[in-house]
Amino acid sequence: MAVSSATFSTFVSPQTVSFLGKPSSFRLLHPTNVHMVRTLTQATASKTDTGPRKPRGIMKPRPVSPEMQALVGVPEIPRTEVLKQIWAYIKEHSLQDPNNKRVIICDDKLKKIFGGKDRVEFLEIAGLINPHFL
Image (cartoon, rainbow, N blue to C red; front, side, top):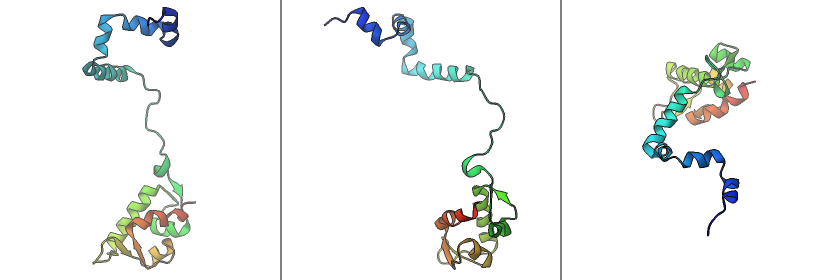
């Protein structure tokens, strides 16, 4: 069944037809060349924003509760830094259970942050610090 050129042109733009009509164009579509064309296109594309971006998401500093301030020492801090400082505090004060290193034995400062719990598993920490971000 033959397709008329009018029907064909409604599905395919004239630029595509002219592109596909050139034998040299097929070389660009070869898998080894597609990567090179993509790389050249990305290298020549101009970047719209220059310089460092503002922190977003978990990297953005957020205000913290007074209990958290007592532990980390600053009024605003990113979640990632809070977790690092809590982990450093745990290591510094040897608060890991010697039999199961995933369990943290809470002292008075950590009990205030972790809702009065005596023992906390490491994976629970991220959830327990949520209420302290205002």
